[in-house]
Length: 75
Image (tube, rainbow, N blue to C red):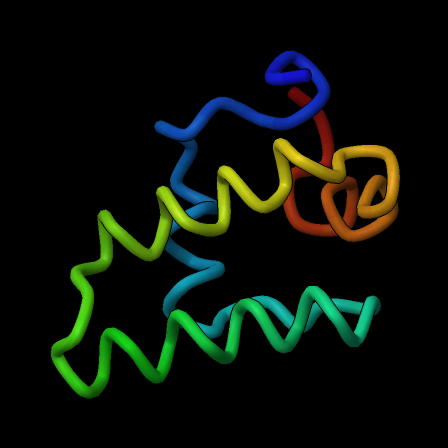
């Protein structure tokens, strides 16, 4: 559910795709690494990367609560 994750307009989403946060969950770090590589190669924009991660979190919000709280603190 969307209310289970922070709003997409939060600055932390941009920080995530820029590599400023390390994820505890390996599978999540793989997704972050994937979008970072896409941005560096020019295959996707930062906004598209944020959309991708946002949708990924939206699918599995309960599985990433600890990572969400570490990055966003509260929402």
